Image (cartoon, rainbow, N blue to C red; front, side):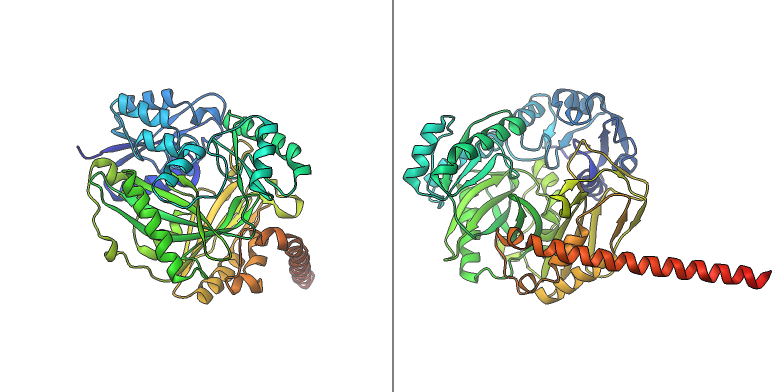
Length: 483
């Protein structure tokens, strides 16, 4: 297969900028696209070429026929989808191939398989991967669902069969609540994914959410880049990600990595991907889903391994073999990623929009910031609320937490409300500092964190007010002396 010389980035924001940077280091030209509200996007300015995509700001990034046509006109060899939007659209991947454009990602059949939660669960079960007890086929009938839930035993979880990211997902703790939760889950599934089908499985209480980063070439070479702990979540959506997991037992770590790697080898998977598991209090592991794309949280893995995941994706798409063996991967230290979102944690995480008036970023050793924001940048309501990803690294867990606390204290964004204050409270929490957390951690502590954040904000406002008054007094004194 010929070398890729020009890539169209079918995405926006920080991931578009991340891909553009990877292309530049590989000597590959990059092409950015932008909707009418993204014309001032920094990724647009950083790419070698850029082209507008008209129409609804959200749908513009989903019209793959127009995007492929644009890539061909621009002379692109390949398209990188990033995450979100078209990244897990099998039809898009297939259409790229039919039009002679390389899709930088897995084969369409694998995207289709793992995009169907039921089919992927059945496929993984067949090759010996442990899964949670539940339905093997999507369902629409509420009465049938209630019967299945009763047979499994409460609590159960209802999940959208053709979605992810916590959408279309409801926990049901009793038969009395089932009908309402079923309707809520199917309605949300239809809204976000266009399909109402759901599946039902046993709900594991207080688990850890552990995912394994897989990387595989076209020649049957499959290896892992270790695990990430994504247990700190809100409404099943990740808030903080860590590599490696601070409290995962070494025996469990080896087993979960072995299971994920073997499964992807058996299925003939290519490119990068993430196999996600729940780990219960007895260290039992259960497959939950596979993401056939680069993850938002990929930087923490890059930092502890030194492997550039985006560049490896591109090289695998070119037909290159992996450049290293499993035993050559070295894991060093701890990395933590904080998703900085434009939302108000003290108001049920209500999204915040507007123009950033002041943007002061952290730095120093062991600090990485992936962002496309800047002072003067406008956060629009059309897209996800993430503004930046703050990633810190240190040789040990204690050092990583201290680094995080320092970096978060340096990070200031004015003009829009963000969740930085929440992150500052989390890193001061005794359980977090000890590495003790599971998927219920944030729900249990949210009220306390909000109370502490309110007090911190009040103190900060008092400090700012005092300094402002002091400066005004000094200015006034100087004026009176001159006169």
